[in-house]
Length: 344
Image (cartoon, rainbow, N blue to C red; front, top):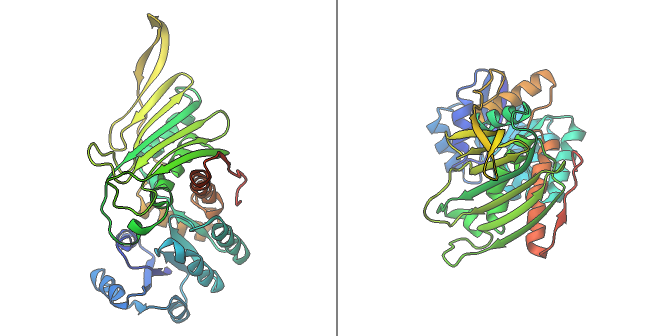
């Protein structure tokens, strides 16, 4: 049995609690939120009658003495939550992004190392079935090594609340999913980025609702990202729309169910090489999927076995470095180098 305290009972907490209720051996023993009534409402909604409710994480941790903390707070509060968890020898699974600044990200990762606790981030796009299939297909070499990766993200959500007041809202709050998925699918390490942000005339965000970026992912791989959170009409999937170009063919994915690839075959049609469709194999039984459910299960398995989770903080900080590199580039108007070593 693993006991966990969940801190942050806003809308995103539902995804966590929906997953947690499906896992044998996991008990939510505490709920924390600055609004006690909101925490009580979540407890009633999920039948957590025995959970300790409070507005102070420290107090609830001291009372419940859990094995782990589930962090679903706003990014600005993430460092305080992490330090409170590690001070009480709790493992920590956190919502993305890992932190709200490079300095806080490094501080959290270092605190986890000193405490000897498992620390992982909910990068749930890695646990999407087609993301797993793409990674396995590219690893097979069926169309050669990837040379360029292109992702479009165009949706126009009216969130209300803190997102509409954030600086760099698209890059900091959403693009981390796309950046991390790109890293994973092509096994890339970020080395540099050039990015531009802008605010369209119709935007209802304070700053940074639209952005375009070009990343160097190492080993000759380039990743381009184009996105907007105020683009009405012809919206993409929340997973984005993808094209991956490789040495001997290409793969496209609409972010939903349409996933297809073509490989170069002998001969040409005029000046164009001939291609033919090639199957992208189905999921392998070893592929871990399930979004929040899969990540929480892997987190628990890491605690039990000592095997590092895939989305561990020391690796995820590379994806976060892409975000902060893009922000710095947008602010300065210049290309920014991104450290590639793990944990930096």
